[in-house]
Image 1: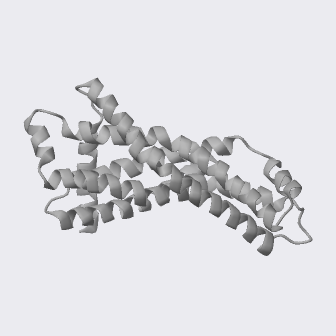
Image 2: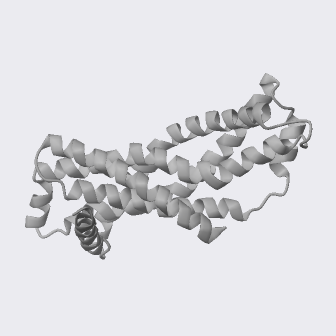
Image 3: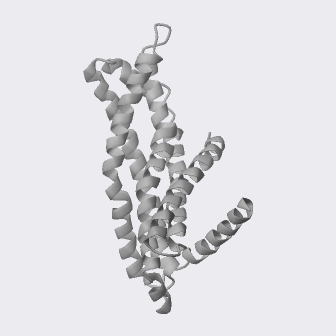
Length: 247
């Protein structure tokens, strides 16, 4: 039964994506919506990304220094490990899990409200491809902004690590030496590539649950919750395969 429900939902998802990725009927209106979604989904998320990344970078540095660093290890191990964690996992996977809660619920509740208030039905009556008109700008807007959020997350995570030098956790020289040691530029690109896939998952899955909601306001809230849960699960599954594929 569960497997049957999964394939039924997956089939509806593919059908919806087929309607979403079509040539916009009015390019001027599409670009207007595209810019709006970039600001709403990307720019408005910068604050929480910077705040969380700063403190996570600081906490990682402190935890490694206090619990892992020993006399048997070089002094730069703390900085090196902090950099690798930020590049390989936090600034792509964990950050997108956080964004799935903020951005995903926003998308699902917005489109779901339009569905239950019959605004989507009105668009379809007017001959507008409602799926493409509402969902495509959100998908492309989040995919466009996610690389910038990743770079900002990495940068502020490292800044947070440097903030621990003022607390005497580690010296600036040792931290800098670790951050520069054996740096692999591909890890930055790998983080960006993974985040692009995660951004598509967040925007498309959340839009699907909002677009297909039936009922009233209670069902919109339920769809929003399902969107966040399903997006998070898919991000975790995709992270395993992408990490193996790109490493």
